Amino acid sequence: MDDAEEELKKKLALLERSVFDPSLNGREEEIWARMLAIREHSKRLQLEMEKAGPGAAAQADDELDEQTMKTAKKVSTKPPLLLLFDPC
Image 1 (spheres, rainbow, N blue to C red):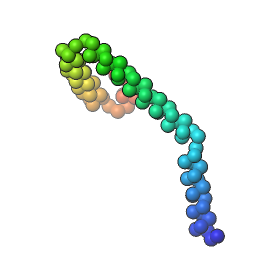
Image 2 (cartoon, one colour):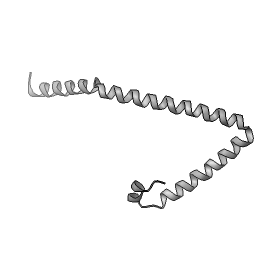
Image 3 (cartoon, rainbow, N blue to C red):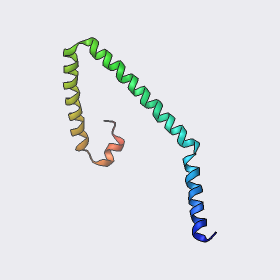
Image 4 (cartoon, rainbow, N blue to C red):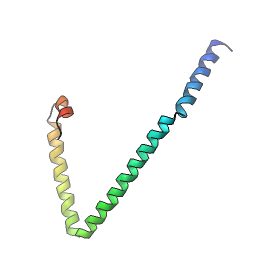
């Protein structure tokens, strides 16, 4: 084989090793588990909102939007370095 073919063979071997890397599979499983936990938490919160009644759900949505806006304004006015150290 010539040099170009050898280089291509090395690149393909490297790609194959990275695809079958067990740490990558572990990270994928960790992310999947977190997604499932978030989904279950979301279902529980939804059930609690339904138990509280339709008026409480609408009120909570309004409060969430207000709080989100306040947080967004607070974060947008801070210098970037302070964001790393300030627990908003």
